[in-house]
Image 1: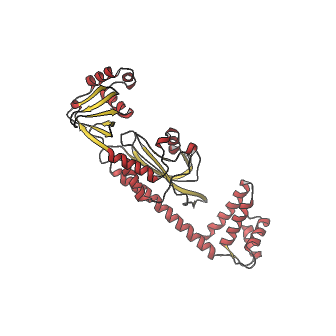
Image 2: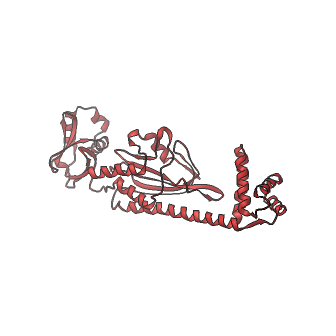
Image 3: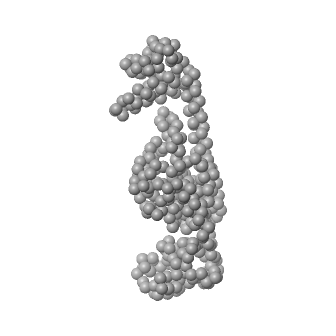
Length: 343
């Protein structure tokens, strides 16, 4: 078992305006940004970084003479493209910085890809970059698992659902999907992430977990599966990865639920003992102390058949009376061991 830290790192790095209270509001935000965005293809010779009253702006001569402000990410990409240090350019006046970009911007026959929303350039990429919109990723999640929900709110109201200027991250669980695996209880969950501006890969991670703390650390996870792709080539295939990974998680959840339900039905139909004396003997055989066995017999009652489910249910109710967690655990383990007899 492993502890997963992805969601916790997101929790501590996101500002309040990047948090969303529901999957629907996150998806609506990403869809709106997609609709407002534009991709400009521009040879570098026709791209200018010019000084204006409000600072540096990008002028695209092949795009109806568009004038775009620069985000922090697109500014960093331009600096890298020109081979100049961002920290150095930040120390220059706007006039000097514009001359630096003019003198260092490489010329090429291949066009650059400028991704913009409203009047801001959000990213600048070479022609090899393949964009995948956050809204498309979230739609794939919704198709595969419409009933999965965000985790309980974390520290400072963190939601597990985030989208900012540079990337998106979503954390989903099934709070009603608890099943027994290897004698312990687990529930299904997933992380999915993407960046429209190339800040990170697109990917999905599915898992079964035992607990989530307020820092959104996922504790004691098993069956952890991760798929991710870079934004090159046919990155649209990543949507199939997301659908497949989450659909398999849901299918396994449903199969385990069915198996658990079948086990309960079988336990209800299985006679554990013909009378109180036989129940005492069988419980002793399975390591249940005589005093605890007597409580079980009294709870099930002499006028009710001593079924396997009735005995397990009685043990579970007795465990709930104990204040000490260690005592509860011992009795719960006895109950789980007996329930496995129905399989």
